[in-house]
Image (cartoon, rainbow over all chains, first blue to last red; front, side):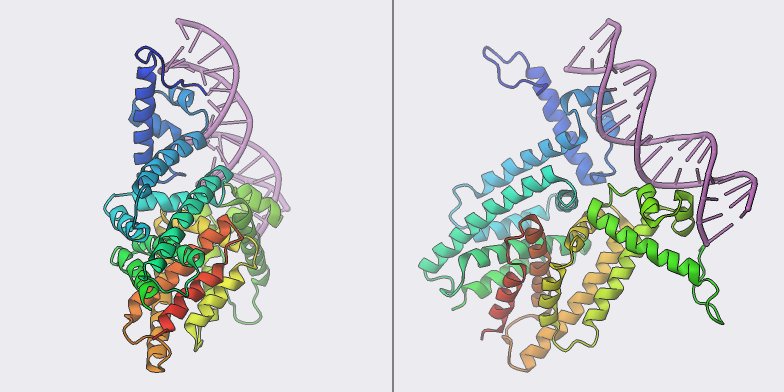
Amino acid sequence: MPTQTVRTARNRYAKGEARREAILAVALECFAELGYRNTSMREVARRAELSQAGLLHHFPVKEDLFLAVLRERQQVDTRDYHGEEQPVESLIQAVRRNATIPGLVRLYMTLLGEAAENHAVEGFFVQRYDFARAILAAGVRQAQLAGTARADLDPETAAQALIAVADGMQVQWLLDPEQDMAGAVDLVWKLMQQR
Amino acid sequence: MPTQTVRTARNRYAKGEARREAILAVALECFAELGYRNTSMREVARRAELSQAGLLHHFPVKEDLFLAVLRERQQVDTRDYHGEEQPVESLIQAVRRNATIPGLVRLYMTLLGEAAENHAVEGFFVQRYDFARAILAAGVRQAQLAGTARADLDPETAAQALIAVADGMQVQWLLDPEQDMAGAVDLVWKLMQQR
DNA sequence: GTCTATACCGTGATAGAC
DNA sequence: GTCTATCACGGTATAGAC
């Protein structure tokens, strides 16, 4: 680890940290706009206004930069779910929100492609899905107890399906923004609620 | 176009065509195994047992090779649907079958990432989805007439949702092969059939 | 149609000075 | 922490022999 974080007595490395944050912001922008493959370390460095070698000081290999961006997004997404009492509804809301942030869905799709080729990125997604499945399955179970979801559903399978529709619709929406992303998720969830 | 196809009187270019086919097979293998990014033209050439320049004679740029592979797969997939009287069931079957072909789902995911960054690949997917949606919507409509699907479904939205679950589950399955790909698609379809 | 040879440029990555 | 080289590699391209 080249960069230290948190220091006693007024953060002597505050400047380095700030730089790091700035780099991450620029990198997210680049990945979303250009894609992973077409984003060069030189370009990120240019936009962050430092040399390529300077950038490599913070993130020695391109993948490190990528993963750092991912971890930041994961924090945001996790926060959104935490303490949520309506997981399924928040999923639908998240889908809707994603559509409003330019490049985010595109980035997500790029990531998926990357995960297929890169073990570290794959690990990121595995964790993410495990987390989402657990949350949503709990949500389904809760709805069943409350009598607002079909009792004959297997909560795990239902959770899988809900995540899958959400993911799949993001892809379709990206390819053709006419598609009603949230509508399809909503449809499936409504079907699960019928009794 | 460097390579001519179809010739009167017993195909004088049969050898070149065969070479082309062999290259495509090797390329599919490479993309599935190594991913798009990690597949070099040199490697494809090596495996196809010809020089890099020889490969470039058939496919001047890497993307051309990629698109050719895509088009071939599209033909296979399209054939599977054609004349099918149970579109939804064939979708589920296709999902099951994909799981048995090593690297295919991985390739598909790689492609999605590529589509996010590459207009030509994007076009390929847009077409593919339009086609699938039309087929499946017809299938839903037909099931409604037959009384085997809920009458209150919007066939278009239902079709979107079905494709989305199938796609989304392939992703989850790839990341964790424990997941029951076809099971989730089946669940959603069963829900659509209840009345 | 296919080969060898060669070159160009952008890329991720490293070494070492300041 | 940041820089200036410098490297090897990959995608692309061309010339010219067979």
